[in-house]
Length: 396
Length: 96
Ligand code: SF4
Ligand SMILES: [Zn+2]
Ligand SMILES: [Zn+2]
Image 1 (cartoon, rainbow over the protein chains, first blue to last red):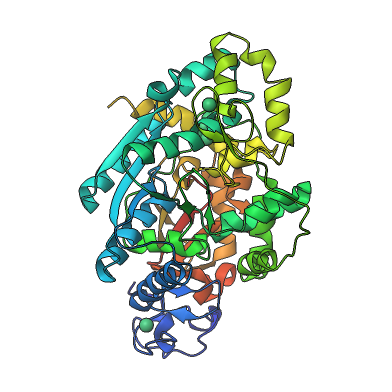
Image 2: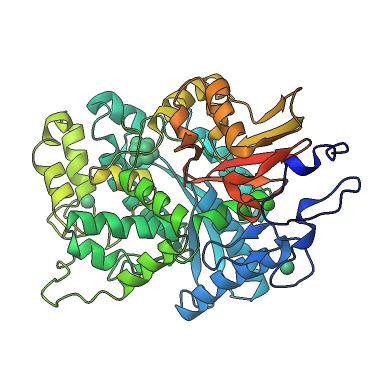
């Protein structure tokens, strides 16, 4: 830090032009937070371009989410709300924000953390440790519900059975139902998930590209699920991924970043990359896409399918038996490998009227969503490397 | 010049699975950030360098902080790195 003046003329800094050539020049000395006009800015907001300091960032970040909650009437006093918690950045920040706002604004909510254990050795067991630490920190009850308990299959076993081809389709269908069932076990009447503006813009794009009008219509809703299924909401609908990550970084929140070891074999989610490239040029693009989609008008003929209950498990769905039970039937009869090539998967992937997700078009992790409709996972190669690295560190 | 680098959010696995790195350039007082990240890509990553650098800038979706502040406040990839700077690279592309 001390002797960087002798290079004087050769290194003009980019925006602040002339800082004096005394010892230890600080480059950002000329800039002040655009909100408080006192502190040094630490962040340029993607939504507005404003340069703001850490304290103002916390304030505006939390206030905006509070406003989203209030203006969309997401909760009522006395609600029991299950926070879908994966240990990843979005749900970790969501747990932090929900506890903060519940206290600060006296929402009167009972909060719970709800984690689904898919049974993936070296991945989910590690991320669940993160969730357990979150539980300590926020002092709210945690429920972990496993695929094994619910379906008598772990993802490890499913992958051993069907290989690495359609595993994410199974996993996504199972998880959606598992979250609902876990919430019911907790006595919760609502679920919140950490889907953020980037996730939603990406889903809008994908549904648009696929011509999936019913999903396009539904994916923009801040609350999904009705008539028998628990309402699910997305308090981060208007919150940028960048700000969520910055918030977690500045607050030193503890989150888990490893990808699933069974994530599919291609390295990019095209829609996500496309979106990130666009965002680099024009950061407001994410909110712009959401706003555009909110203003689409759909013709009335596009009807939601009729809701009914699964003959086998009673879960809300639009067919005789729900997709999870259908998959299970195939798994248990040893036909899963073949069946996936025929009916179940085709129906699942093609039919927009598949309603096992209770109208939720964004599943509980982006990977599921992406793979279920034929896009590939981002950073797959990294995942393979992680597979190696996590196997060296995961035997605790 | 000496710079400290911090890799988080899942990026550390590209960099020998280590979070913290220090690079020293004995013959340099400053270095354009663009040059530094290209150098990092070419010398510090074993596999999949395109996950870090794309079109000679940091791949979109990776956040960069210069001395604990958003790099966009300092000209982004055009920033000139100086002795003693700390750069943090945070992937937003991992996990959810
Ligand atoms: S990548 Fe996600 S959806 Fe696919 S198997 Fe792993 S946890 Fe399940
Ligand atoms: Zn401020
Ligand atoms: Zn069923």
